[in-house]
Length: 76
Image (cartoon, rainbow, N blue to C red; front, side):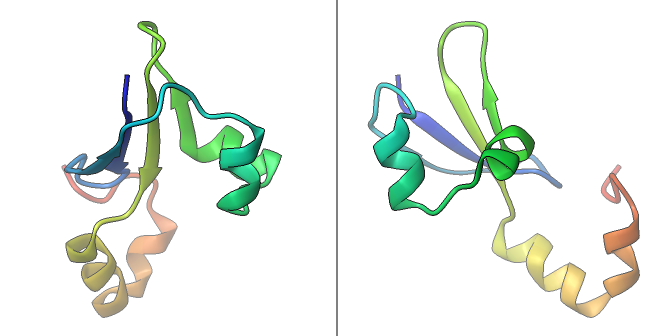
């Protein structure tokens, strides 16, 4: 199953990696700390993984309106 990259704000799928799992080599290569792994990587019930990141559109909005950073979910 591929690893999905999804925007944590608007939930748009950004892309996929054709990997079967997230292993230590993947985490080290991408400099992902255990804290970041807990916050941003979701293990699905079917064994799939989703990495929650941010898309270019949401990043642009956050740069224009920095007060959105204080909100947990700013897109309804």
